[in-house]
Image (cartoon, rainbow, N blue to C red):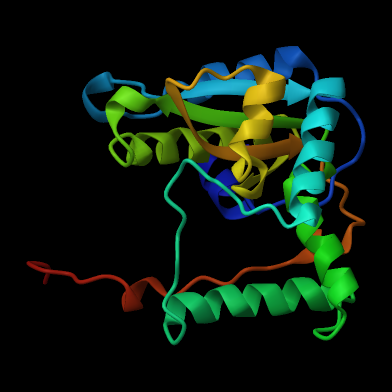
Length: 224
């Protein structure tokens, strides 16, 4: 798959087949993704790849904490959108499309709660990649570089017929990851990527998220 096709085809996959992803394939993806740019070649990313019993233990513990009402305790900067902004409106538009496809009425709190759980279960993907960085780099310093490696992982995954979903719910309870994955306190847990073979019959995978016309976000200077 050529890079332009990959950029156009990449989308968030929220439903996966149970087929395991071979370790060799995941290794190739991370090897290729490590060529992403970083400031002064600092390469501030670290990967923890989960599958099998470990991933299942993390899933169950995340959901248990969520349903207990335990407040999330993320170690990364959580994005927020002003209520009346276009950014919030885009988020709402996406949610409406997802809930319509999944047949989740606005007033059905039980179905909405079950949908929320899916994010904390890494959307039931057969594998998940946790990205962390060293705390000595500060809270926001390495985020641009980590963003670049995340995008590269997601594009490279397409070459192997895999889908991905970048999601922070899987890192909202870092104490769970530290318990089962033994991530030291010297590392800051940033975000997760669910990865696996897409189930194209899963309704949410039919979401088509629009893009703002580039003319609305670009200023051209010095051109004829």
